[in-house]
Length: 407
Image: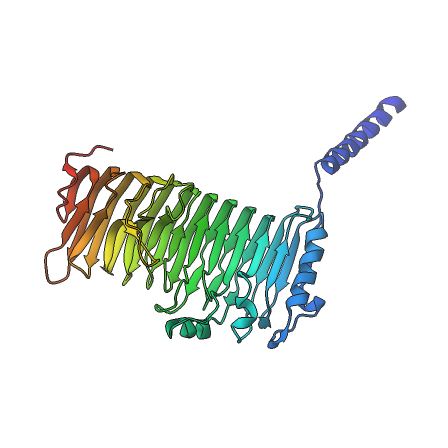
């Protein structure tokens, strides 16, 4: 009886000890760390340079083997160029929670000499929640719009490069000198609930730009700016855009592609549930008139409302910003593009413009349930070098064969 009672006590204790060893080997339990930038010398007064304080907090988070949260409390925190390097981090998750505003210097020249104002390089499992980024770019816009010969190109507000598993939620970016948010050479990116705001005449202020990145989700966001609301550059695959309000701006663009001859393409993009209001373009694919190895394929534009949009649906394979423009036909191959459930108004007569390459005609273009009207006059279409199908499409698009489309 004594032996049995001892056994009844010893065995459960042994099992508990084994459980503790197993949990420890799996990295549990873990502790987390919270860092407040004020503890590192940051001042929420909008005038004290807090750059070093932000970098000091990052260095501590980077060196931690446990999940870390960096707190930016209420107030205005003035910072210059910030570069958060991740190649020596322990790779534990880092969250940046912003209750206040991060503000660039009023003199645009302070950060314009850098390509980016705030950048994260080679980081993994980084999240940003809330807050405002104010790049104070209005004076640089004015400089550029008044001739711009001696104006710097300007800094992009927020960059993630060479990074993985990034989550941006509830962030507001205003008055960027150039692009607001840039995702480059990164994977598994989720951008949700962001707001972007810049004047309609602010040059090159793309809201969100994606390039050479894979598995990017952009959802539930409002973008008002002077250039593309969202642009998708070469080398991007599996990009999903949903529930976006765009305007003012230049629409949502694939490209530009083919600016250089040896270039990667864009594959597997879905743009869904978007409202365009007063934009220059709606859904656009743009390529340069040059020889190119690039391509745009497997694209879906669906469930879209247009309100007084200049070019609701446009493929422009003679896109050009440099003068003189190239005289070649585009070598970019545009194929398998679907337009479904797209309705609304165009503020120009041509609501559908498909201007494809003579050398590489667009193929597999499908339109289904498209109804675009022009205010006070019938809408028209214009198309060249296009092969595809149309079903229930207004305006009539003669380059597409009219057939019953079954899905």
